[in-house]
Length: 295
Image (tube, rainbow, N blue to C red):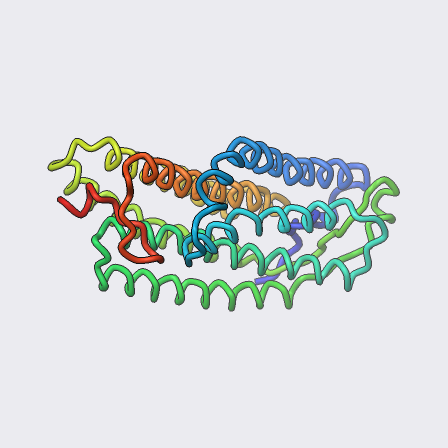
């Protein structure tokens, strides 16, 4: 189903509003997008010393590469998003290229974030092959499904010049797009639910037999992060299904920032605790806590 709506880079057209009304809504929408960058930058500056101390000097592994992808891809995403919102004299072809780039970067970013959760869940389950392969296959299926949906959305997107609406507006202005984002969010929500359930099950088993601060930290941070990410996904689905069409993508960058901040902090907290407690590296790809191995 196609409809007039706001897209992730600028807003959409409502024929019942005046140019001044359109301008105010678009500026409000873009202001929220711009504001989403603030916590990302602030958290980066807060955690940069930990990154330098805990990550930079370590050997290159799969987990280290995934961390850097999760850490720095969002900055490119935000930069492209800001340009698409405020760039001067952007053509329809340029806008479509920007829109496509943002969409695919978000899909890739979600895959990277979920990979961190997979490795962490696999570790707390003692590198159980069923858990590892099962979560990996589910992630692959989710990415394929979301890619198909994104491709369909991209084919439906249409843009219009912003100057006729208001000479003060800049950037890309979406007039039409397929409203399928909620399915992507629902897929993410379902996958996060699986991760939460697996973490709660193993956490209940471990915490019954261990009072280790490191084990408590691992589960506390993980469960809180999952719940916050889960809540942001629910908020996105509710906005899409219940809110005005022009706000369909209102929280897309906010949710992405929440994903990135929380997963990076989980990774850094584990590395920090590992350094203090002489974490055992059984394989380059997976960090396994000595306390967990003994339970």
